[in-house]
Image (cartoon, rainbow, N blue to C red; front, top):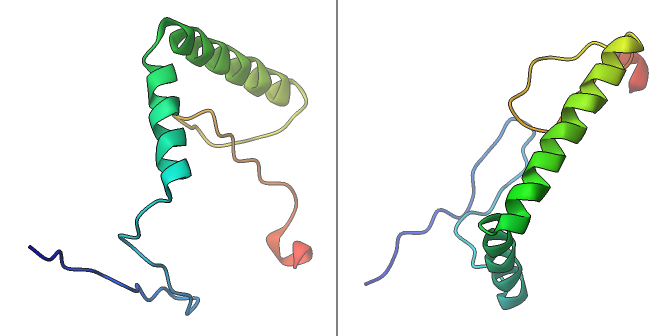
Length: 87
């Protein structure tokens, strides 16, 4: 059976994104190892440490006057300055 393949997606910037490409064996193995680690007791400890570090970092940013939006991930987007000045 042949799978349908979507090769390109047009986005406003005119760039193209390729979908349904297969990962190289090393990438697939790294992903499997990462999921195995996350499912282990050590992985649970690492995730707890990640969230503790995230909370501490956010707390320290707030103390220093930084503002950021609410995030449900450890990624903390911080807007610094004016976008037009940065270009």
